[in-house]
Image (cartoon, rainbow, N blue to C red; front, side, top):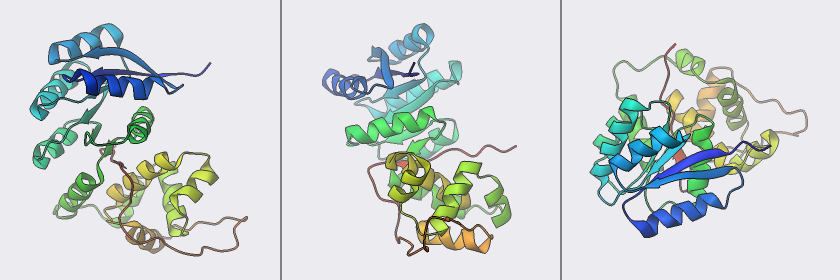
Length: 245
């Protein structure tokens, strides 16, 4: 039997809330288990329904952060995705460092939202591309930035595998086909890898991989033909806070 991702929605705009519910309810692997419009509702939903994930989309962005603070204090195991058009990136970055699992603009497409929910369920956080780049640049300026070999060591086996494929010049679609994962999921993984190894685009990721001896060998491929340039594209990008062992 298919295990469904249990998702709750908290939004003070009924029409927007209904749109999110409809988008998620049409997916076979996602089940909406609660809806609310306030911080009190969110806490009650977390207590009574124990969802895997709560999507928060408030008309007043600060309300969304207040709900996040209330939930993370009492229910740290529940993943939280904030949908907002907040312009204060410093506050968002601070929330991510305190445990916010994902942040996307309210203009995110339905398919982007579904991909984000699935990624979060797999333990992969997600943020918008522009915010991902801001976080990356902030970490690059950190005087305590870790050494290249240490950066490589914090990658999971799957992330290291994907890094090797980037070094081999494979596109997101090609990587997804080989690993039997959706292209949207690969986008999240790619940005996670770039964030962890402190690079800004696929070219830098490939060069870093090769400098560390990470190579991709595919017996079914004739050769690695190219490396795509530029920052990762798409409506959403991924971020997972580092866990120091």
